[in-house]
Amino acid sequence: MSTEKKRVQFRAPNRLIDRTDALAAVLGEDRTDILVTALREYLQDATHDDTLTQEIAAAYYDDEITFDQLKALVGAEEAANLRVLKQQLDEDFVDEVAEL
Amino acid sequence: MPILIADTSALVSLGIASESSPDPLSLCLDEYDVRVPNHVVEELHDVASYDDDHGRAANAVLDHSAHYTVQSVELDAEFPLDDGENAAVTLANDIGAELVLCDEFIRLGLIHASLADTRLVTTPTLLSVFVRTETLTSENARTLLDEISTARSWEANSYVERARLLLDDS
Image (cartoon, rainbow over all chains, first blue to last red; front, side):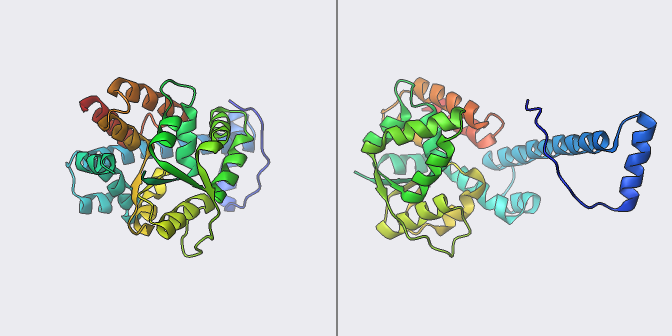
C-alpha cells in the first residue's frame, strides 16, 4: 500500500470539526487521524454497498427480480448498464455474434 | 470478415493475457477486421506509460499495431462519453461496423443506446463467442478470463461470474 500522502483542503461545518477535535483530544490523536479514519471507514462501507449492488445484479441476471424492480433499487442509469450485461449472458446473443 | 471496433478498456483486457497461449489479442485480430480509433491509440499510449499490468497490456496492444487499422474519427459532441468510447461509437455508426468491443461496464447502457446497428460485446462475452466457434476450448477460455479478471479486479463482479458459468456450460 502506498504511504505517499496528498494534501487536501476542504470546508466543513464548524460543529463537525469541533466534534472531531474533541474526539482527537480524548484519543490523544490529531484532527487528521480522525478524519482519515472516518474517510477510510466510509469508503469501506461504500465498497460494501457495491457488494449489495452486485447481489442485486445477480438476482436480475437469474430472473429473481424484474427490470422494473431492478430500476427501483439501483436507478435508471445503472439498470440500463445491467440490462446490457444481462444480454451479454444470453446464449442466443452469443450465437448471433458467433455467426457473424 | 466482420469489422470490430475496439475501445481502450477492452484492448487492455485482451493485452493483459497477450503472453498466454493461445493469446486472446491475436485471436481477436485474426478473427475480425479490427479498427481502432486514433483517440483510443492516444489513450493506449497514456496507459502504456504506467509500470503495471495495465501499462504492459497497453504496450502489448501497441506492439500489435501491424494487425489492426487505426482510423481518425471526428468526435460527436452529443455523446457524454470519454473520447475513446465516443470515438468507438462514432466510428461504428459511421462505417456500420458489426461489433464494438468495450469493457467499461458502468457506461455500457449509454454506449449501447448510442449504437445504431452495431452489436456491443464485452471481453468475457467475446471469450464465450470464441468457445462457441471452437476458436478456444472452455478450459482455455476460463484460464484467460481468470487472468484478465485478476488484473481488472473483476472477481466480485456478478456479470463476470455468470459469464464464467457460461464458459463452463459450453
